[in-house]
Image 1 (cartoon, one colour):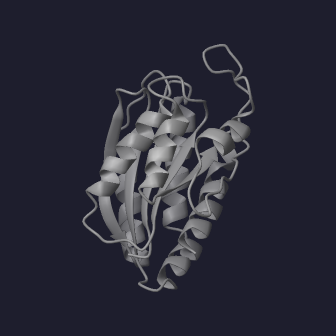
Image 2: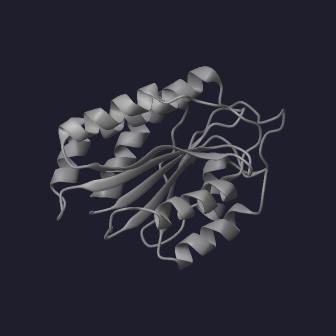
Length: 205
């Protein structure tokens, strides 16, 4: 595979029902976007491996869609349909470190070889559960993975408190890492789908 990509998506309580739907719709429409599929097909191998994870506090991570090969429009559409039918939970707290640690295990169990291994973390809050996010990040990077970030910058406080530093700055300093790591900010949940598409094209290309 040109890239093995774990999509790790925040379903903590700060993400309400509408926002969770917008997140899923964002991933569904991005993966099945003809522009994204075209970029996939132009790769050396012409296919990527995708795994879709949802996470909240450090005790909750779930592999929603297992490793799937995406190398054609039909495979992208099938993946998009499967995601629309998967059940969804919402739990308290935000453990980015737990999401990264779980994604590393998912990566280790991938049935494909990948020329690059990328974990894609999206969320709307800072780590407030489990060990520090940068510790998990550093271990993943040491294993040769890249972590990219998609912080969702809405103006609602988490549990009544505004974070000490802006979320995009927090992701820059504590979440992303590895060769060529980057973040793309979604200004709010409505802008999420566009941000996901831009991010996938950049990750795959």
